[in-house]
Image (cartoon, rainbow, N blue to C red; front, side, top):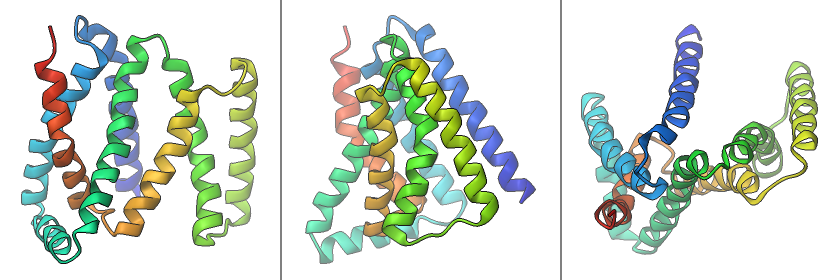
Length: 197
């Protein structure tokens, strides 16, 4: 459990650092940063898959696409859904829209709890219900202070649960599925990088 907590804290710190440094990457635009992020993520994910001996996940997914070509279209949709989220994450701080996106990330766990209950019949224990109620009160107060919910907030808060639900439905929720999402995003990433002035 300690390992998981440490990994979660480290991920949160890295998440914050990436968000914080993006305005310092000017004159790059959010689209270019998105492109470079995808192009940097793919090789690192490849190395991680190989190091963990999990490249078979990618091969298995490729076989599934050969057997059921319609799965390919669903994978493109999955890549597009996460691509929009990655773009928004890099665009928002540079466009002065960091607060609405941050509110989306605050709202996201509550939407995930709701989605888990509705889609997967997951039930919360007493302490989890209390934690969820306290989180809802805190997020609600912040939304009132912010003056409402913007499209950026909704895109994060609803877009990610839809993306995760799609990946679960497609059985691509492991690291190999993430690799496929990044690989399918490469053409758009290259376009954004090459069209930069």
